[in-house]
Each structure stands twice: as C-alpha cells, then as structure tokens.
Amino acid sequence: MSLALALVTGAAAVAWWGPAALRWCFRHVADPVAMLLGWLGLLVAMIATFLLATVMLLAPGSTRQWALHDLARVCWHWAQPSRPAAVDEVVGAVGALLLLTVLARFTMTCTQRAYRAHRARRAHADLLTLAGGPPASGEAVLWIPHPTPMAYSIGGSRGLTVLASAAGDLPAEQLAAVLSHERAHLRERHHLLVGAVEGLAAAVPWLPLTRQAPSAVRLLVELRADAAAVRECGPSAVRDALLTFAGAPHPPSALSMAGAEVAIRLQRLQGYRPDRRNVLARAALASATLAAPLVVGVAAGILFCL
Image (cartoon, rainbow, N blue to C red; front, top):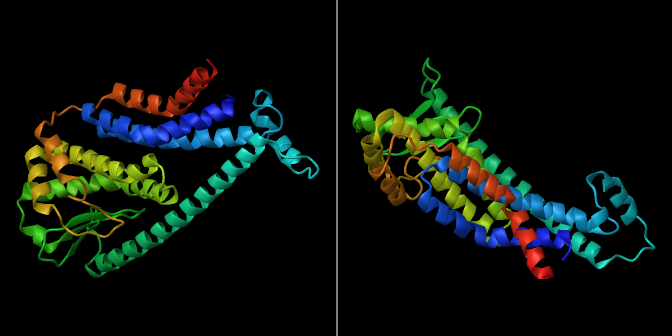
C-alpha cells in the first residue's frame, strides 16, 4: 500500500467513524471548548490529509520521491501530451476534481449564507437606528414588539442582540442570563463557526463527519454560551431562561437562546460545577483529532502489508 493510498484510507475512516468517537467523548468530557476543538480538528485533518494524498498521487514518479518543493515539476510533468497517465495519476486527478467541486460548492454556499445574514443584519440595524441606536455603553440590543419571549443574536462586525418585548416582563436575573448568553455568542464569533461547518455540510453532504458537524457544533456553542452565562448569573437563572425561551422562533442565520438541544443543555446544567476548564482535555482532543487520519492510515498500511 502506497503512502498516498494509506492517507486516503485514514481520511475516509475518520470521516465515517469519527462522529461516533466524538459522541463517546462528549459523554465523558464536560468542557464544550475541548469538544469544539475535537470536531474542528477532525474536519481540518480529514480535508488536509485528502488534499495531501491527492497531491502525492499527482506527483511524477513514485511517492518516495515526492516533496513539497516539486509542485512546479508536477505541473510540467502533466503538461506533456505524449505521456500516458499512470493509474495513481488518474486517481489523483479524480481526487483533485472532487476537491475543486467541493471548494466551489463550499464557496457558493457560504456566499449565499453570508448574503442572507448581511440582509438580516442590515434589516435589524435599520430597526435599531429607528429605535434610537445603541446606548452609550455601545452594547447593541434591539427590542421588537412580539407577544412571545424571543432572544437571539445576529453576528457580524457589528453584531447585536434581539429581544422581544415580552422578555421585558421576565425576572431581572433571567434577562441578565439571556443577555450574557447572547453576548458570549457575539464575543466568540460563534456565528462564523456555525456558518463554516454548515457550508461544509452543504458542500459534502455524503460524509457522516461533515453531515453531523453542524448540529454538534450548534449544541457545543450553545453549551459554551450557557457556561458564560452561568459564570455571571448562576445556573438557576440560565435554567429558567432556557425553559422560558424554548421553542421561540428566530432567523436561520441567528443563534437563539434556546435554539439547540434544550434537554441536553438542561441536563448539563443540573450537574454544573463552577470550574470546568480542562486544558489537558483541550490539548488531548485537538492533538488526537489532528493526528487521527495519519495514524489510522499508517496502521491500515501496516496491516495491509503484513
């Protein structure tokens, strides 16, 4: 088994079985940041491994002679019309075409999402301007008339939090928890993160890893925002706010107070402990997921050659 084929095997293995491993980790790791690093690390590693394998297959000569500085020689080698293509080069060409197709679909999907988000942001910003603009503190909060308690945030360079007028009747601690939750989304750019994985899922819907990443990342960013709100307002206030805002409508590009897996978030709040930051878990998950395709591919190559 060539090194390129081993890398493809590793990338395919983590694409199919990686989500199951990450779900197992989710049951044992309380830190949402560690799990976010795990999902993002596995996505990046899978794409980078497949890209590296494709370049190696397209490289002239055997993979033992391949080096990064030979990229110009690859282009010259392929430009010669009289040379018949080898099998590995045909496979590499198919892989390159697949990568270009995925890149095109990803770019188109993200562009469409960004345009819709920009329109929603402009519409909310216009309403905020008509309402008198943000307060002197600079925190942009838009109150809209609505009988149902709603709370969501709109991302962007000038993100804002949107609250329904019905939320004004809530206890002060619940309202503070909601505002803290949405501020965490805006501060940590969760909207960009969710948009990126949803764009990748639209570009590569046939892989379990990319298909399941959006729902997992949405849940994890909500858990992260819940943790920020708990540090400021306490778990009881966040729990009551989740129950109050559960099922409230919100725009597709927004992140809502109770927009993902409320039952799981309530369960995590029941066993909440003040200090859940685990640097070791974050480093371990990030390192393991980044190395997973290479490790699996090398192991498959060794087993195949035995």
